[in-house]
Length: 138
Image (cartoon, rainbow, N blue to C red; front, side):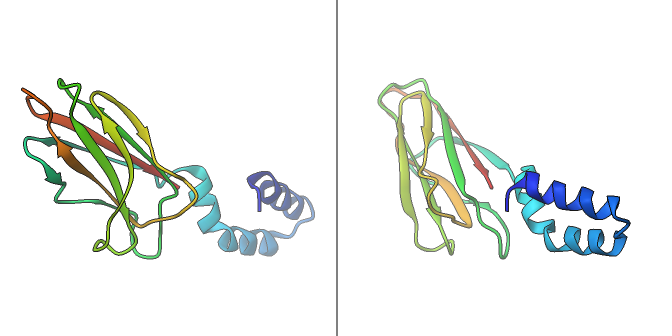
């Protein structure tokens, strides 16, 4: 149900004096409102000095999932490669996008996953440590 419809229902209930109905609607739609409000957006920045996956992935929490995944890589080497991976269970990981050099990557958003992490495929030639930022949202 779209946010505008939820708000309209709540206003109608209050206007008709239905405080009990209003409270029940708020409880029923609490989870949806929290996701629509964007309070579940998380990010994690990691500095990488070696190849491999980050040790601590972003976790949406028990019973929750992320639906949008973005990766920002800050690297002095134009041939560095950093992958954004997602997982439903923190065991089996699937690469969703790959960023080469300094830039942005956006993963597919037609699936929902609980975990996300970065995986440095290559630091690039003559590269100092690189920084990878994962941003996940509802």
